[in-house]
Length: 69
Image: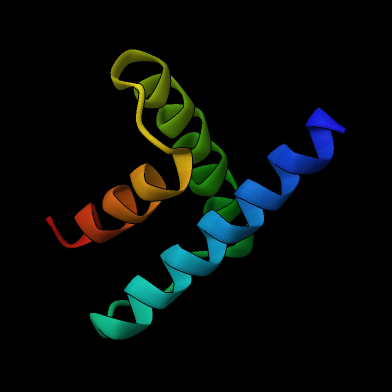
């Protein structure tokens, strides 16, 4: 069950990343790079959630928004 949820979070992170790249008219990286970045975002979001007690989904959205920086 946990692996299923993690995969869903990574899929959501990929969609958020793709949306941000398209919105900012940036070239979309290769699929393998996107998957790696999404996995890193989810891992970072979980770490931040543990530290701050926030919701992982909110953190993922905030991190995806930071791509342009």
